[in-house]
Length: 199
Length: 199
Image 1 (cartoon, chains in turn brown, purple):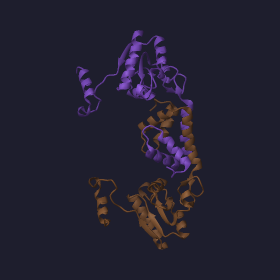
Image 2 (cartoon, helix red, strand yellow):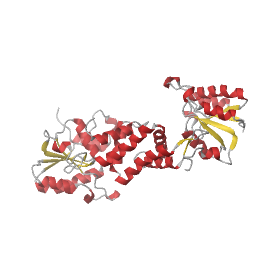
Image 3 (cartoon, chains in turn purple, red):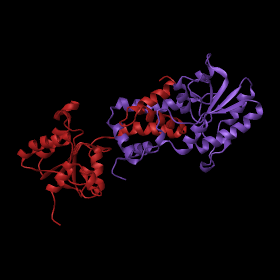
Image 4 (cartoon, rainbow over the protein chains, first blue to last red):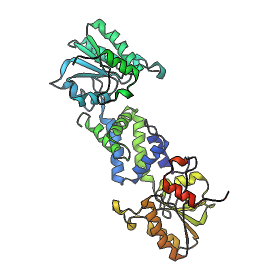
């Protein structure tokens, strides 16, 4: 747009690359960073660099970690017979927050999506099969998102895993807790009816 | 929250410091940065550093610039008899985009706000008075936001400037172009009625 100094413009462009941040939001954030004192801004820059330098994928589950093998994979209290397969490291955090899951994870780093040109070979599926062939796993929980891509990926994996004689399960569909029947779409409502449980 | 590796956690905290970004948004952004390739992430970090290193305040109008004196203040086609006083560098960009203003600017870097502990002495008011005392200015346009703080700051400045024999004006209030009468608050509607113009 030409009204901003070039280094500011470059910073705006960097922010605008992030998902969900448009040109206006990026401008606001860039000005905010300029308004920080120098020390703070350098800390911000260093946090980005450091996160990229120190964090890489766990050799086993492919989650982000500082170590060769992440604390979950090495955790002594974890149930090593269950693997929860998720799309991204964020999903691991979401499950850990429930404090209800004690098994291991496997992060695919994506979902099969022909529309976006993402095929099975771009996901961390080989690494999962290596783990399963290593033995000791009794159940694989498909915990991909309840979307077309999530479903397709779960189906694809289930077909690969079943021949290994390992149980494959899928997260339950239903109403979100605290949600409102009125706002539930008919597919969700239909599923929650079909999967109703006894009280 | 303890589920993320420490460098990731630090990056999330950095994003969460930015205005309008909560913990969830910051987490999403930090993961996005981790997902960039290393080159891209380093560019991002460098853009922050560089913006802070290369950009400082214009010696005259206090707007952000790479030079000692910004291109607007040195611009040969600018009307040097008019100064538009704004809260922040973002406001300068907003006016420049209109392509209707050819005068100079003065950036206060804040508004008087006793609630937030911001007094007149923290704003770039001395610098404005130096410019006005330098002579040649015929009009100062108060272009602070139409908020309590913006009004108070405009009033305060007008009192300081009037004794210098310089005309002080204020932006017009009225309906936003493309807006809807129905959604206008009564104060705005009242002002737009009072300031009605002949067709």
